[in-house]
Length: 112
Image (cartoon, rainbow, N blue to C red):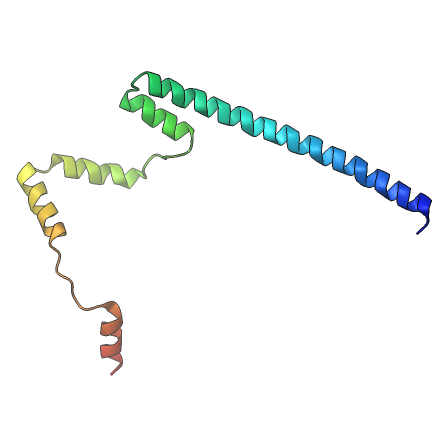
């Protein structure tokens, strides 16, 4: 390669680097603006005590939570309609599940 070819290559690389730096600065600025907006919203929530609905809406907007599937609402409705004593019985049963044989033990036993 000649010196002139090297100079052209360096000039092209310098221009490409300048373009990339500009793109990175633009992207960083956009992300910074998004972060600043989120921080402002969070500061607003910190200063005033948000209602549960406001907090849920904010979390949904940030993509932290999603709406539950439709079938979950029927399950939760059934749970809410149960008498408190029955709920306590179910919770006690779930808290005191007995451990049975491990799945691997069952498989080994069935192979014999």
